Image (cartoon, rainbow over all chains, first blue to last red; front, side, top):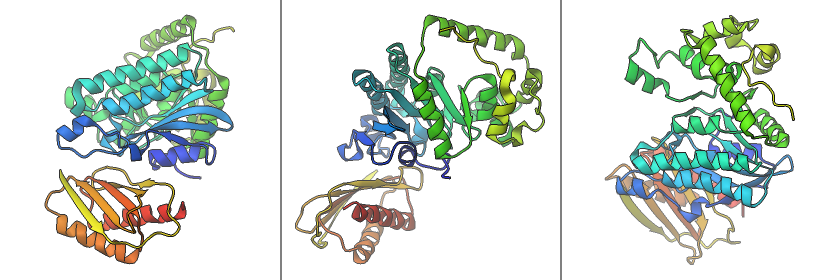
Length: 298
Length: 104
């Protein structure tokens, strides 16, 4: 078992796709680096913190992009975003079986200002365009830096999202909330609070992610491959049902002061033990207690 | 940022390596090392972009020590550094050249 949490983006791709099938696009030898960071006299990375390419995943033809959280917190700059857009557009052109995005990002790369903001919005548009073309876009979150800011919106736009308990997903990160609203609102140094609010288990119970797996590359691989096989069923109806679910959720839990209160309100049978349950036990118990959109009859 | 270039005589590589490798991440106190095959009559050229200014002599010492322990040639080594210590630099160089020679 190899940890997903601690692996670099390159090691994650290597650990997930079929052996010797990954063909990198714009590899480090091309030196497609950020023009903005150079102007600001900041260090650049040869891949601008994201690795893209084609591969096989349990035999399926996929395009894959993996963000490297170690480089500037996985933040999205102009080149970084363009690489993700390119891999999504290429998937449609080449009629791939799916796109896999290993997300790890604090959001927009503030140093690149408007170029970074536009890059994130283009990624979101490309995800939705791929889905509209019938292409499943599978997101995975399980890295040390989590998935926040604009990339959390991108994650929410994916067909299917796989998370581990260690992975974190949120619009504003804990430090941002504390800075903006004060430590009484959210103590970013309270690790238990951070994980029960943004961590994979809570996201799974709320229906923000679709699969909860243990922190290892094999578990992520199997869950992602299964989601690619399931394909894409994107329609106005699926979007409307998701919006209805989100409205119901806000009505039910909008005033809940803490994630633990929501777990009790959901009627989850082991709310007190939730934080120590292994992923597969939580999934087995979650059943009807999760908030998910009502299914669309096909 | 400071740009540094070094040239070492190296030894001609037999057989020539075919594929480039990259190790490390440009994170605080870390660096990425890209090793590419480059025919240069055995020479090794090293290009460094570092966030820490004024450490040229230390880079040279670390690289000299590295090439003494790892006789390689016909390579181009490119480094993006975000303030790694000499020990971290040595480790990454070692990892890079190890996977580079493995992939011959």
